[in-house]
Image (cartoon, rainbow, N blue to C red; front, side, top):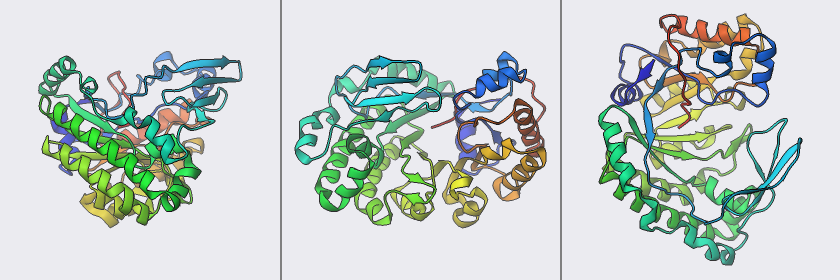
Length: 371
């Protein structure tokens, strides 16, 4: 079913709109499509349009808050095994075709403050970041019921992209002024972009990508969140709120439990994909945080590799009474992994719809809900 912005925002504000929301956030992992094809999946199932997933009409607003390096990404080498390319930050990256969809950086543009100062202009504001004509069109979409969204670079993720994971963690102690200057520069630009965008189109949702944790926990702890991320998050979020934003949504894999309180203190009110195998249990988190935090995802993708009893147990636990009535978008906790049979996936979809009191599948259509 297609949702409009008013119903979606009401649902995410813990209002019961007469129906729960059941969606697919990311879609299949690499090579799963071929597995399904061999198992007799239809073209519409492989294309994800056969399952009548819920999704909201949305538009990403035409204001660029990220880097403007002037570097044109290009392929350096392409083989049957991998693709080597230069990305928008000038990094050499490598994708192993058989097992990955995300390029792995092999180098980074920033090691020192001097390196940062050479590229700082990538992140400063200029009016070319704003597409006024497209924003006028997006105002029309907003008025027709489209959710309006704008992104901001990650408080951890953008310095990590520039410096690499190890260096950005060390810099917190050895060069904190470098992290601070990066985030102050980005926040100033993000605010100026949002002000110009918001003057034309009301903003519903502010989105941020972090991916800052693994199974053992986040790469920055509460002290780093409070010192570096909080001023950045709060400045941009308060600006977005002044133009109507109701949702501040963060995408991070891994176990974020150690810093959820701090993230809420930064203004965050929505998290996804909430990976159970990394210790993110949305039922327990709902008990702890109540209506302070909404969730997307949270259903163990690996349960779908098991038998139907395991799928039943996972869905009956996650789709239980505390999670109903708004504030939850039920979905797998990331991409559908290899080894999930099309039979089990069909069962998962139908069982979930049954538990949520939804009608049987009757329509086509699918859109990623990862924002």
